[in-house]
Image (cartoon, rainbow, N blue to C red; front, side, top):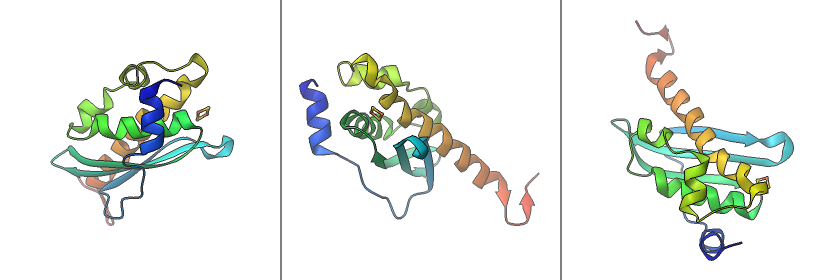
Length: 129
Ligand code: FES
């Protein structure tokens, strides 16, 4: 494990529940134990704040923490352009067998964006036209 990954793993920045989140997105698979919940505070389609809860290995913790930093301040569209590869580069590389740990953040963001859009176009009375 390189020093930057160790640092993210130890600090665990932004790894907490956000009670007033605008939207939540999930990534990974709770069935196999690697799983994240990503909480976003969004205003005008911009991610003002991102936090997450992680169940997974130290690399999952480090990559998810880094991902919350990478997407903060970005539009949802720009945030969704960030790939697992970019997360790995941000952390100066991941071992091959840990690449999948970096994919949960981007997956959770796509899921959150879907939930965000659905919440905006749907009302309790049905879909707006
Ligand atoms: Fe599965 Fe890291 S989350 S090995």
